[in-house]
Image 1 (cartoon, rainbow, N blue to C red):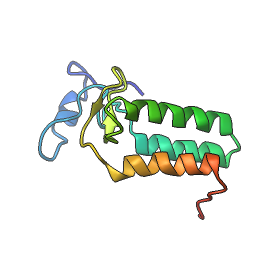
Image 2 (cartoon, helix red, strand yellow; image 1 turned 90 degrees about the horizontal axis):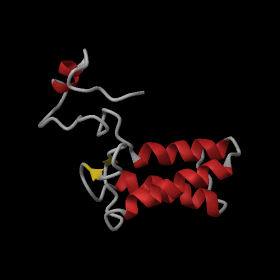
Image 3 (cartoon, rainbow, N blue to C red; image 1 turned 180 degrees about the vertical axis):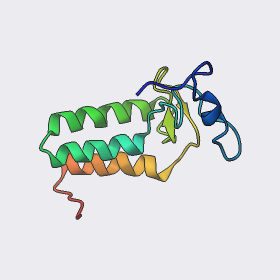
Image 4 (tube, one colour; image 1 turned 60 degrees about the vertical axis):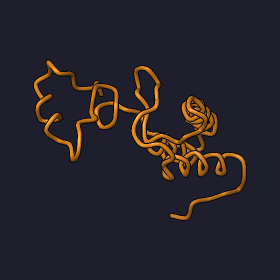
Length: 112
């Protein structure tokens, strides 16, 4: 899905949907940003479907993104520039990478 830009029909709806400050610029946060937590769970779903190669590629990209700022585990990344944004040192961002790593490299299983 493409991000919403200032000249798009729904920009004002997006602009008015924030708690403290506007952070949904195109390619960021809820407007097309890349979330390590979501991608980590997507990688786990790929593993569940026996797609180890694809899951490993997802993990590699998560680790590459996290390495941009010394593994500060940012909330999300700009999906156009790859630059980190949002809050750093997010436990959920780190947990997604760890869960996917452990699921790929050990016999770790999440019980559902």
